[in-house]
Length: 191
Image (cartoon, helix red, strand yellow):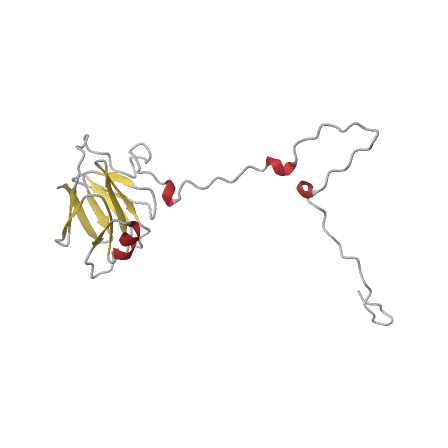
C-alpha cells in the first residue's frame, strides 16, 4: 500500500495462511493440569501409498479365471507341456522358440537388453511395431503379451479373436492358436 498524500510505500505485515492441523504444534498443557491422553498425531494416520499392480515386474501370466470369457477364448483341453514351439508366420517365415522372445520389425536391441531371442518380422506395410509382442515359453506354458504396439495384438482360437491389452497382462496360449501382430499372424505349433 502507498500513502495517498506522499506516495511513500507503507510496510505491511504479510498475511499468512493458517497452519494446517497436521503441521500445527500441540499446545503445552498447563502445569497444574495432568496431560490428557493424546490422540495419535494426524500425520501418523496417513497410510503409505501402495505401488500399482500393473508395473512390469509385478506381472504374472494370466489364467482363465483372471479374464472374462467374453474377452478371451476358452482354453482347449489340457495341453501337453511343450519344450519348444514353432511360429509359422503368414509371411512364410518359420521360427523355432525354446524360451523367451521379442517379436517385431526391429526387436534386436530390446531382445539383447532382455537377454532373449529376437524375432524380426518382415512387414512392408509397417503394421508391426519395432517391438510388438513378448512371448515366453517356461515350464511348458506359453504366454504372450503386447509390448505397447500401435496397431495392437490378438489371440485367435476356434475362430474367435481376443484383443490383448496394450502393454498389459500376459495371456496363456496353446499350440493351435493364432497370434496377430498388426496385419500379420503366426500359428503356434509344437516343435
